[in-house]
Image (cartoon, rainbow, N blue to C red; front, side, top):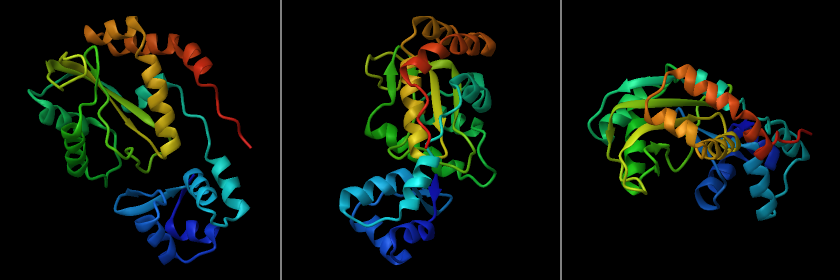
Length: 233
C-alpha cells in the first residue's frame, strides 16, 4: 500500500513538514516516483514502531491490506516481455536497449532510469553468474503499475558485466514493482528460480519465449512451496 506524504502525516498525527523532516533526518523510508515522494505503509509502520512514534491503528490495517501476494513469475514475464536478439556492445549500450523495451508508463523518464542503472553497475556488477544479470538500482524501480513485472532480454552477443564468475552476460532480468515488499519478494523468487539448470540452459541457447515460460510455469510449484502466499488480515 503506497502512501502520499499527506496520508503518512495523517496516520502519524504530525504535519507534512514533519514527515519530510523525518525523511531527511531520521531515515523514514520514502521513494521518489515521477518526481513525487511516496511511502510504503508497511515500512512506515515498522519505522514508527522502531522509533517510538505513535501511529494510528488504521496504518497497520492499510499495511496489511498492501501485503498482497505477487502474480506468478510466468505471468510477470508475459507482462514484461521476453526480447531476443537485443543489441549492444557494452554494458551502457545494453542497459539503454533494455530500458527502451520496458513497458513503462508514458510519463516515465527512461533517460534517468538508464543513468541510475549505469551508476549502480559502476558501484558493483549485477551479474549473478552463469551468464545472467539482474540489473537494478539501490532503491527498487517503483512506478505506477498495478502489479510487478519482469522483463527478460536475451542479448545478440554476450557482454562483459564484471560478473562474479567472470563470464560474459547473455540474459538480463529487470524487475519493476509497485512497492518495496513486492519488489523484494519478486527478487527472492527470481533468485530461487535461476538455480534451475534446465532454465539456465534455455537462457544460454536463447530458447523461444514459450519454451522459457513453459519451464518457469513448471517450476511454479517449487517457488510457491519456498515462498508461500502472505497471510492476509
